[in-house]
Length: 256
Image (cartoon, rainbow, N blue to C red; front, top):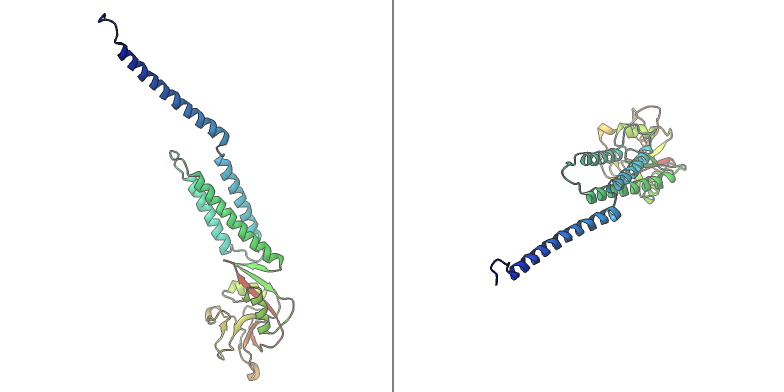
């Protein structure tokens, strides 16, 4: 054998190695092509999904903002919380590092949950407003159109999943004054004379007490054990009255 001729087995080994290398390159190219094809045809347009969810979420928020716009010029706690959540989400989206791909699934999941929560809140608002309730600072209020005793008025509120109104602030008292009627409120001293409690069992605070001058007075030593709004032309408009008298009333239902 001519020593200058190449070894056939060595040549074959080189050809095998070269073939395997070419196969690896072709496989890698095929994988890349398949991925690009799949991405272009099946991959969701994340930017469009996020944009649509954000627009839907903001539309729902604007609808919620329209509730009680005339009665509560200050944003209520519910709307403030929703606005803060929205702004936090926007800040998160704006602070993504350009070198790091955002977790689109997590962003979409968060937006979807927020949208669905807004839908649930809006459904609650629609339900109560259609039944004639008024909204003010995280609570709905039902203004009766007939008269009942204090006890029957409270029973009516309880049947509605609410209770007689508990007035916790000057702003809420101003809200009730605007209706210009004599209303039962959720205040009574039937348990202990002179110890006024709200229907939830809390004691009346002197800082949120709006008795008219000279009230409560149990007029002529009669048992006036139930609270009402009466002197609505002035800020201090509360009065104590006999619980069996027939009057309008205000129910209150807080919104989580």
